[in-house]
Image (cartoon, rainbow, N blue to C red; front, side, top):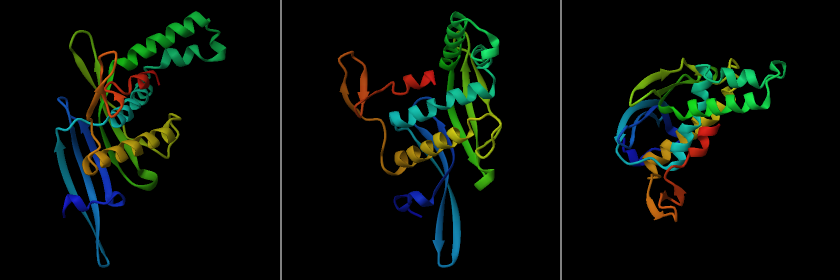
Length: 203
């Protein structure tokens, strides 16, 4: 099957990993109907092209998900409970600490599996420790139809966005392209800051 003929409705992303030096490592299946029979072919593509800021921003949205699964937001959540009687100063301190934790999380891979009520995702990330050390983080499978954490519906929307952006990256050449330099000297791509997604660190 020619990759040029892959239609969006036939594309099923199963895994995408951000390559450390730039690019994406993608695993996906393509559904093809021949007569009355339906076939599924598995593909693995590794591209060194830099991803578009939209895809980068979508990955960044998963930082808060990982933080909640690991209960890194515990003190922030407690401080916001009315019964805690926390002072505004304490609430702000808890929020600042939470944002510092978010900045230390880098999401680098998702693995999607299942269908219908069993569809879900496993998120891989790293936590940046002191110095140059990093520690791997991995969630359990988060099923979209469950309500264990309360973010499942939003999570599915984010994952669908990553699937969409990965398809555009692979087959529509939607990738990072240098267009201009901002007055502040930062590189901008497709009219957006190369550091797009910084604001998502504060989700």
